[in-house]
Image (cartoon, rainbow over all chains, first blue to last red; front, side, top):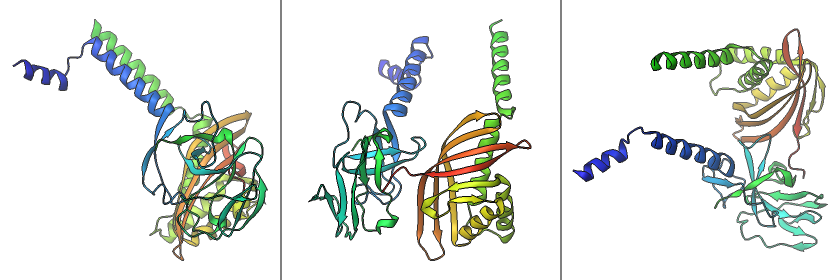
Length: 166
Length: 164
């Protein structure tokens, strides 16, 4: 009898002021957490294949760069006019570094960088250019499409919102 | 007694919501212009010629004469008349089997009387007649001016978020 009452109380709780307060706190906490700290996102597009697939679900962890700055190899989310639509890219060069692509290989500061996450064939040729102060250079992992059609380049650190949770 | 107060509170709340919903502010009018732009640029796979003609003709009404464009990625930089813009949109739509334009994160600032600056993320998806998939997402910085009570686009700039 007591168990049945407890189950009923769990699924159909009495609307006491204490219960309503608890519901309000959970709602406000969830809104703040999922709205400003760990925002859910759906991946659309193929620019980060095979690391992230089209249609995948993830979260943007906005505290990732609260006390640090993005490093080479990090995957970051770049905001546009707001954060409802963001770009998912990988940081390949930091401010002040010279970045280029030769025979599809990433070259930073004259040194070829190994990128095990790039699994599709790439034949990009991009002349050396320097990353401006306060910027990082971001590229997608899927470089199988022509250089002209892939959206990449240097972006202000202020536009980096965070990183994917996994 | 308690029910009486609850009814009064509900009525007041309903009144506030109704007034907010019904009053046509300039911000709502600008949001509506973006809505129309998205609707008229988008193209259904089985769009009838009547709808195509209607959309192309009406797109011109959204732009000031002239409207300054800065869109290096599609080689469309310069000042254009509304008819030239409608012609460009018409040619672009013709090369697509379907096209969807959606706007996100619209932020409007009124810089002075009759002039508003709006930033927005535009997401364009579609398929060309040759079968290529089009997917483009860009930040737009626009200026709208109010003439004869209507907000029209007078400047459109595609912001270069990633600079190669």
